[in-house]
Image (cartoon, rainbow, N blue to C red; front, side, top):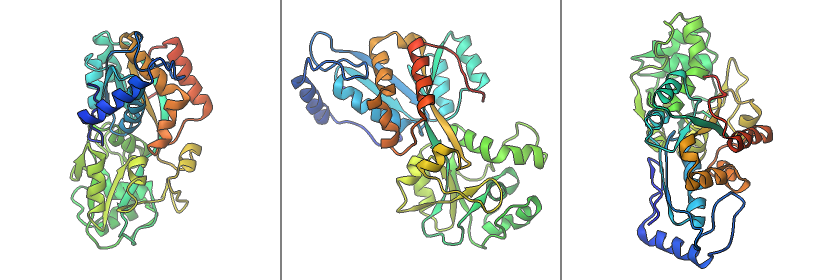
Amino acid sequence: MTVIRATGFRLLFVALALALIGSACADQSGAGDTGGGTAGGGGEGELAGQVVVSGSSTVEPISVAVGEKFIAQNPGVDVTVEGPGTSDGFELFCNGETDISDASRPIDEEEVQACEKNGIEFIELKVGIDGLSVITSVNNDQVECLDFHDIYALVGPESEGFESWSDANELAEKIGAGHAPYPDVPLVVTGPGEESGTYDSFAEIVLEDIAYEEQGIKEDDPVIRPDYQASANDNVIIEGVGGTDTSLGWVGFAFAEGATDTVKLLPIAEEGDDCVEPTPETIQSGEYPIARDLFVYVKKESASRPEVKAYVDLYLSEEGITSVNEVGYVELATEDLEESRQAWEAQETGTRESS
């Protein structure tokens, strides 16, 4: 039986559905290679084994979508995809418990050292782009644009204890936030927990420079207030933000764009009124100021197994990489995708990204 599990996301094939897939693929046995490096269903060359993927809940939908395509062609392989968060995924990966680690940020130095300690060599592959979306309820008509200083005043370390938007007014004026004063309405913040790469990316891109360089917060201290509703599950964040009219939160673009019946994606500026709405075009061009790259990390030892190699071959193929757009993220520029393909072909190990 072939099962794709997407913990925290959306997919658990039941036995009947899998039997139908297996039957359909068996009917097409001998169909040959699909261009993604995978074996066709049926016949003596059918792939078997298991591919275990864990890590970022942001990248998880892409890996699930690729997995769906993969098992349709290779029903003899079990593919498991889980999304506990980038940091938790790297812990599993560097302990040798997974084949592939999904990540919404580059691997950091401590994680590299953990992998090295356990003899885990990895191949780093950039696969897409995400725009971190700052969201509120679709019913909130009092907020239309925020800059980085506004966000700091509302969810930074100095905002701990603020229960209404207006509680942040004094801090916002002090730091030069562009869109204060704020309304005197409840402020309910819901966002990713510390185990999430989305938490790390949001902190690094939006808040760290203001905290460390402008406000004198001690280097390496947390820059996101601790008193908010945290979850590793993006759907829970969407539900939390959508359920309170004057909410605030942040999540990956695909999840936000898929929930515009309940949440509103706020235009964002680094400073002032030049706010940019997150769209596929503004994210890919870099106009939207909270964009980040998405990655998969493949254990080199696992890459020698035919089923893992075939899964990654499909991931980087034209058929597979369209999954990035299909689930709501933004495809890489041609040169960046080609760099990932070359790294995979050469089995180039180590990180090329600074974190």
